[in-house]
Image (cartoon, rainbow, N blue to C red; front, side, top):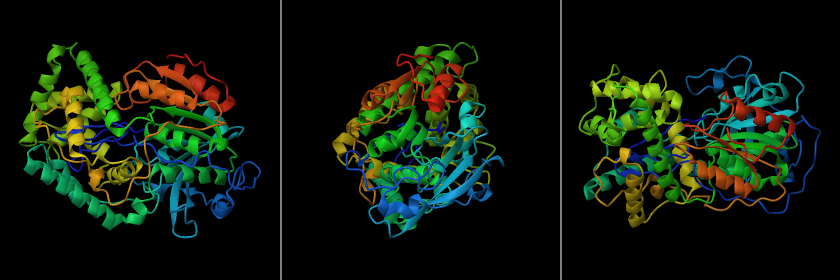
Length: 532
């Protein structure tokens, strides 16, 4: 699952539905947009096919060529776009889909998928998505190892269109441009500073259009990805979709449920986004959730006399700012010649707040920072940013920006941008650099070269089976209440996990995993009041 957040100069962008205040330029969350769907329209004429043969289930006649294609499975070596090779038991293939579903006879895209075959009696395939948006999902074919899910399902991962090994891929920045962008603190909220930030955003958007193409950028949103998911379902021979989505992957799940309600067998949506919520409100609530995660970390750290934030939790925000604010003037040294910049320090800290299992690294990184060294936080920031061992980058950040900018309406009103900045600083004071002026730059998406294709709305789908939403009480990226709201809109069951982390399914929590396995394999209903 995606467990990263980032403050970036070009729009201070963040992932997994999280919003980060990078000095002044607040980004309205990624992975938090709501999308137009075709739910509620008459079902297309269709044919049916036997299970496990391409063309299974509902097949729109005008898309039959895509829904009935044969896959050529092969080793995954050439599909890997990061530093995470897949085991030899996983095979990969490309699925051909229309670039524009309104014009299926024109250009096509190729969606990279991965598969670990069922070890026992096969029920069908189960599709996983880790979130993002922009995260490669090929490794998800190894999810739920050692469970009945692995025994009874072919486990399928995929790189959504524009992402990773899927083509055409979104590319906006070169390695050199990304390295340079990460070094700039970009905290000047004066009129000149705001103009400079917006000029950088306009330049980035222009490069995306030039290097990727407006026709591709227009068709990389959730609206298209869920239609790709339906093609994948049919090509794999499944009459109905079984799906597990994390974080932004819950947006894919809820949008698929709206668009193809009759094609759903079962869904687990973990780390939910509320489709009705506006990006502005979602950003502010996420800021408050990250502050809660930071407070929990500070309280845990304060148990030790050597805590870099001290033992007085009431002063933790100030102690943290005293550590990171000097980086605005100059980076601190690292063994890597780049040094640790201010934005990378914030990125590394917030990534570590995604899971309590990373608190030890965060404590060590802040201790190092107090000693004038930045290696640990830089490594965390590099992982988030998709920086590879050879110094190049995956297209994670570029795809993230492209998807979020078409998934939601942009904020183009300067007064609203300033109000969001003020509210976010109040909600997350540990991220407030104290340089607010009452003004803020417009977000990157205000300058995006193609229009948005999604809007906030209440999910509306009829005829769905019972779905499951998993929500964690102290999730910093997707606050608990968003899961409550999504479960209501889907009329689904809610599983509550009491913890400090972003998503939990199939991470070894037996109280969570056992009922989910029973649900996915046997369609056994969950107790709606289950708390783990």
